[in-house]
Length: 512
Image (cartoon, rainbow, N blue to C red; front, top):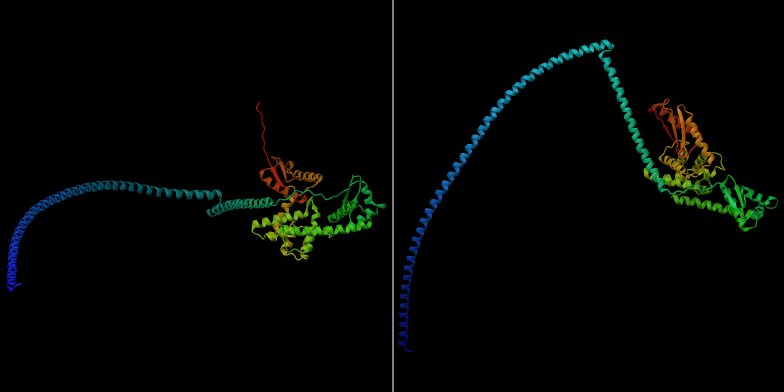
């Protein structure tokens, strides 16, 4: 390409540039003019809008000012009305206060008048009292101080009487509660102790296969029966009773040895002095083994341990002893159980109470061998075999020979009475029973004023009818107490006897 061409191209480019510049300038000027016109138009519209808004705001401000003015005027009017109402109320209250004040003044005047009248009446009453006192002193011959002393003495006496009655009431209430608690404890102990009724007898009878055996037991010229009686220390009663021999002795252990010996001889069939001697010795060892076993069983059953072996043997001997038909071993075990239950209820050591209950009659095992009461023998045995002082005291006090000093002694005393007096525990023959009831009625009827007496409830209660015209209600208390004391002195009985006095007034008339 030639330089000319390059020059033409450059010139054309410059020309196009100039043309474009002119065109852009013209376009820009046209846009500026349009923008200025639009801006002017917008300014004019804004001015018109502002003027319109200004007018609207002025109208709204005027309306708001008018509304505020109206509200203010209405509120002021209501306040003026309230003030007027309050003012009327104040005026009315002032009028009421004036009326009340006038009424109070009138009442005060009336009250002052009454006070003056009361003062006058007081003066007159004091004068009258003084005159009455002077007159009373003249009539009674006593001064005011003397009369005051008499009055105070009377008041004090009445107060003492009321206090004594209250004390008696409280004491009776305490006794009732104590009795109720004691009954509950004893009833609970009896219910928990399932004991059998008495069913044992004190006489041992050995059955024979036939009556020919009686002759063999007697032996030639009575040598066999003499050998048996000599070796066992019993009496054999052979009478007309068919096929039976009775064994009689005061010692239950000997009686048991003799019974076992006879049964073995009858079973074996060989009856002669040497065989009798062997059998007696064998039976005696068996009885001693049974005695030891029964004593150990009693301690195991009651949970009492550490007893001397000799005392255990003595306990076992109770298996063959009865008191009023009641087995002494069962009685001792029963007393131990009851004493333990009562002690547990009272918070006392039950083991100590059981031990004392089990040993309380231990002296009965030796009464056939040692002179003296079973209580004293039991005390000596307990001391000999190193029993504690509490146990010795409980044994000594269980029949009231000495006053019980410990709770354990009292518990054993109560348990012994419960075991002996419970229904079915002991039995006595009909003749002794009838004599005791007759003696009970005789004691009751021996007192003046008693019309009739009846022993009821197996001798545990005596019901007494008194003559109402000879005995009053106050005397009945003393008669009942005297009868109870005489019964305690002259009768022996288990448990307690209720003395029940009845005084009845009757008036009879007839309509004709």
